[in-house]
Image (cartoon, rainbow over all chains, first blue to last red; front, top):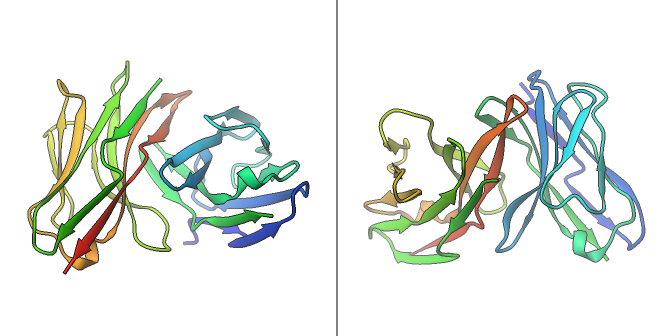
Length: 110
Length: 115
């Protein structure tokens, strides 16, 4: 059972570059979400999806895009990376209250 | 909307001493409450949860939390900590959104155990 798989684990980007953080789950969960973790700020919700074809914004959506074409995948796109997007990103899927988190992607924007 | 406030960003304690990590929440609807733990350089793990029923919930490694509806609190306690409890602890609430449960986290409390 893979659970929630995030790739890559580490990434360094230059300011202005774009990239996609991948997230895949094999539990057939309808609900998926992306968080960013910054020191002293906990985990903040970026975007979430309640099912294929349905996405919505969380607390800190600016600078990020998402899509949900399948139940399994929920990629997070950085359109034009900025140093303020340096963070650890976690993807999660859930059924009811039961959340499963990925192992995270550590992103540095220079 | 829901929000969570963890009242202490850092808590240093000596080994075998008791500890309390404080958490308050606000919500206009009924919520589920959680504590997650993140050990150094690792992901998030569920420590314990309150869904309904008994207001005192326990984890397998000796932590407990009590749901207090009137105080809107869900403080985490352990009577005697160990070095291995060094980690960051996150309080969270979930609330219904379009048939799912959206999770909102507090700012985190870094627990440091000194020998």
